[in-house]
Amino acid sequence: MNKSFAMFGLLGCLLSLPGHGQSGTGFSQEPEVQAFIIGMHEQHGFDVAHLTRQFAVIRPNATVLRAIRPPAFPEKQRSWQRYRERFLNSSRIGGGLSFWQKHAATLQRAQATYGVPAEVIVSIIGVETVYGQNMGSFGVFEALASLAFHYPPRAEFFRGELEQFLLLARENGVSPLDIKGSYAGAIGIPQFMPSSQRRFAVDFDGDDRIDLRSSSSDAIGSVARFLQQHGWQSGAPVAVPASVSGDPAGLLAAGIKPALTVREMAAEGVVAVTTVDGDRTAALIDLVTPGATTEYWLGFDNFYVITRYNRSSFYAMSVFQLAEALRTAHDKLIGTR
Image (cartoon, rainbow, N blue to C red; front, side):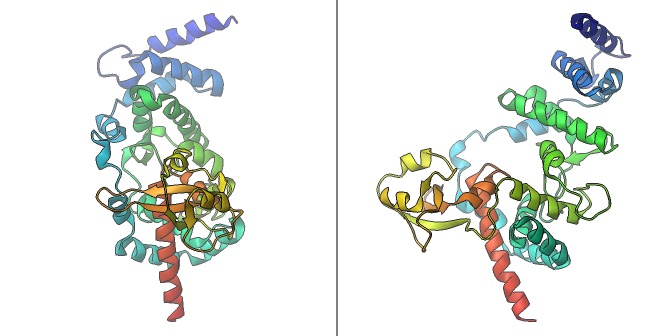
């Protein structure tokens, strides 16, 4: 059949659905959504009528669109001290110790399987959802559709995630309307985006299904595998403090992907405060707090791997420092037994 005729046929089917084109029918009346539905049919075999009815149930979510936008005053956003205090506190450390004790065997198995330290796995879960306590209450389908079709700066990314989400829901035999998560569409205890769940999540409790909302074991294994697949180096350092002389603007502009060796960094006026292999590659990380002295660190490959989870140096440093605090507290606890 001629592809153009097939397209018109599908579109005619879509337009003829009951209620289509009337006010209040949700996303299904939007031309870009109609094209997306047809694409899902052609690429993945989704039923046009069924998917259209599902899109008719959801509507652009103003709360999601407000939450995703950058703050009106960017200078108020970048404060390392304020950011750090959200995650480096007694509540996160105490909760992390409890989570570690409860899932000690699973964490040990994940570390042995993927080479990622238990404290790093626990820390990411703590930063993301306070150890599963705050997984988000947004309808993921509606959140992703809102961002895919009403947030132009990242529409391409979120349309890709919406596609992956619908595939994920179909693979798991779940209605996309029933899945809850964050305003950005992240799901479960480790807050995986749909593409990451389909690509990196694992059944770590052996029940023949991947459940990131209810299975802490699956969450633990999936976080470890995500980091391992992104290049985590077992036993390698994450970051060390550094002193800086001169103007570091050029090194900071180079980004957070390690490119220069520690020795080359030293030649540029950036010196590690502790002893580090001079041949190890690093990036210069600045942790800025308005009104306070900027902290400088050398971030190594494992630091960069953490930023694949969330592309923020503040995030990666919070994960690292919480992990260090958890390791210290855990070792102290074990030592007192």
